Length: 300
Image (cartoon, rainbow, N blue to C red):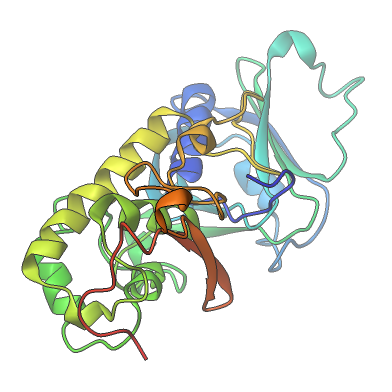
């Protein structure tokens, strides 16, 4: 794996961040909020600090790669981390707001709970975003309204995936990255899931058999579940809210391992070229042509 690789936080990383925020903010009131710039990727909601200050945090929800923090006033704070966004959590003993606190560099939004814990969004590249949306209308928000089912929920099922893939000439790797088909999947975990399912990423989505789809769905779920348990994958920017690194990158089977043999193929000495790296849709795909044999028709 190349050091310093950059990637967009995917479902396991976002789930890990959400759980960290939930542990420190859920069931607590925000006694102080600070907003240090007017925008991130998009303009921040007017008066965001005032609207957060005094709000009681009811609960949290993740939708795809977005976090929703639900407040008692009927609004939800919609959060996307972007390429470099992360939350840091500071214990009461480490902070003295409002006196003596020096925010971390690129710390754009911070929220202090009634017990003194602070959750702060740090985003050097400012590709993240925050918005306020009525809780009752979360799924109607312009960024969420077209999303497909959550891959860890029952709505992500064989019949639904068959219908979504029917007639598609798009490569299955790219089809799974389409948030309208399934929510939250990203480059790393699609490559890993396709390897587990033994499916070549170049295959046309519409050519996959029912048997292959039956392998693919549990492969996606197992990959995501294991990654969440590991706290996600830590590369250049991502850390968990408590500052710990995720460690699922140590369990990658193919991603970032170009030129190495996979755990199933006979190896380079036996004529297998091992794991290769190609570009699909402007993103790197890693797979083993020997293990993930090209059955059926290749996507155009």
